[in-house]
Structures are given as C-alpha cells and as structure tokens.
Image (cartoon, rainbow, N blue to C red; front, side, top):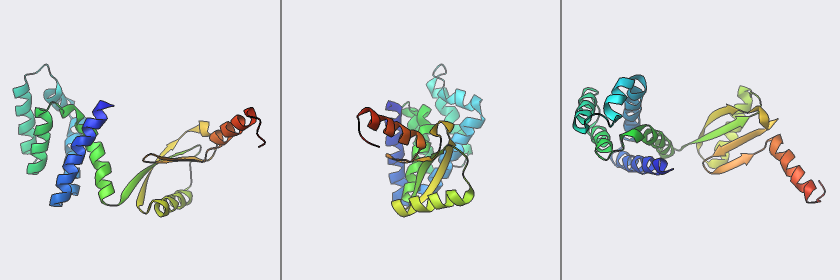
Length: 183
C-alpha cells in the first residue's frame, strides 16, 4: 500500500511538470522506454536496483544508460532523483500511474470489464459507447473473463463498480430470502 502512495506521488509530480511544459505525452513514451529496458534487460535492472552493489557504481551505470538513451533532461533528472531517493524500485509503478494520469489529461478513462463469456465486437462497441456517454470521456476497455460470474458483466471505472452479473443477482436474492422479503 505504501509503495502505491509513493509511486502515485512521484507520478503526480511528473504529470504536473509535463502539463506545464506540454510534454506529458513524450514523458510517457520515455518512461515506457525505460521500463521496457528494465523488463528486457534483467542484468541492467540488477545492476541498478540491487543494494548489494555500491550505490555510487549503480548510479553511474544508471546515469550512463540514461545518457545513451537520449532522453529529455526532465526524465533523466527524474530517474536519477528516484535513484537518489532510493525509489528506483518503484519506477514501474510510477510509470503505470503516470500512464493513467496522462490518459486523464487527454480525456481518456480506463475501465475494467469482466465477463463470464467472450463478447462480440459489436457488444464491446455498445458498452464502450454507453460508458463514454456516462463518463463524458473516451473509454479504454481492459477485458477479463471470469466464468464464476455465470452471466452478465462487471465494469469498474476508478472507484465506481457497475455489477450486472448473475452471480451478484443470485447472492442478492439469497440475502432477501434470508431476511424474509419477497423476491
């Protein structure tokens, strides 16, 4: 939980800088590039993140790689700041939160859509359009399947959960029957 709060704070700080200088989208791409390098080159990640190595040597490795990547001055400074504050391990989380904030800046919201079965493309378009109308923003759907829902869909946009699953309807019926209410 604490790591999420830390990552969110750094992402918010960077998005404010990006908003101010109009480079929010390029900062997103640069962060994604660095995270991609960490994912692809585990030796690089070990060289930078492993506390068993000397901190000055790890910082030199990071600085050299960041210089060779031809990143903006802001992102270079940001990544080195994360290292200096012993937060470099949070870079992936910072990047994830930054992507969400950059999307919000562009008027895009992400929604998690969980279904019991696979939906047709037409149905997905209808759902996306309905959610766009409801939120007033463009919606990016992230799909998941969960057979335990039995049927229907569960949509989560931020803190809002729209649960239209048969599983939940059956649970609600059971609770009503336990309380002696007519269904």
